[in-house]
Image (cartoon, rainbow, N blue to C red; front, side):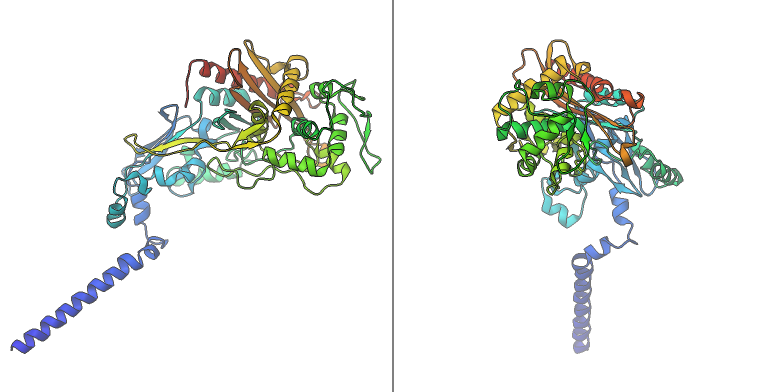
Length: 492
């Protein structure tokens, strides 16, 4: 009898060991496969079973969570959704996440192990922490000024703090309410279909994901290349620049929109945007030097992130001299995002060097303990300090004497560059109106803001569209708002 009891006990022990081995195989070795199985709803239930952490602007949340009482319990909500959509993106139970909701998702949904004091214990228990917070660098007043300045027009605004690279405003219009996509019912599906079918592309982040011909704003890059290369020594000396200018190797003539451009000085050509002078300058500088300068400003960089990815701005590296002439005035195949042109301005404002832009100041736990901070980005030397100083002088002239008068501010020094970019087959499209600029309060040590504005569908008749008339007033309001908040000592 004892023998049978021993055998039964051994069999039970063997079965117990087999059960433990199988449980270990399922729960440890194969857990990832089960987690990733589309039929497994438990991760989604856990993910939406608690409120997401918030995205913060100047200490105030611009996101929230709503308890629906359903299986996927908490839906994402947004305060001033269209205003901040290019920054927050959306967090949808059906369509996933975009922008900060995507790049900072582990912090916001509580799965980032750094949110816990005992990350290894969380790995064992598979518990989810309370969602953390993402603190942005945005200035709320500047964001609103840019949004309201664009109004019903299509376009984008990007504003930076030149000395640090902080993104102060990032606006794209038309916009949309991300909250319309949060749930999993018919209304979310209808909103998704409507937004994707809208010809105006409201979900396109024009500030960082759309590239445009920069037009005459690119002349800042051309002028920097010419000054650094020594092609131009004296800002006020007459240049050898015929008007009209015949593009090299062709019979095509390039003309100007203003008088007085023939053999004009760099200062006059910059203030009044003489195409012929800058087209010839680009050819005189040469493709290699132009490409090197454009790359230093950030063109042709596929890796820029803020932390979400930015569409690379482009300057062709293989062109003939006629194409180079057109590229040097921001046409041909030259393309730039508004953020890139804000970086161009920031490099001039910051003495010839620029820091990579960033949008997240720090991430914290729900109780405010800092999880990670954005370290100061390394400086990238774009041009010599002497060239930067001379460019600041030229950009001041544009606002004080030239085409950028609508950007002027009282009790502040403002520099800028206007642009009107042709596009479409045979340049038949409505021109894009550009303005890039920087501003420095009287008494401040350095410029406090660099901004870029592009308007796709300016309200003026085609012949009257200009960066100075359509884009500069928007930039002025953004810069004025930033200077006011800086004077009060506010920081994101």
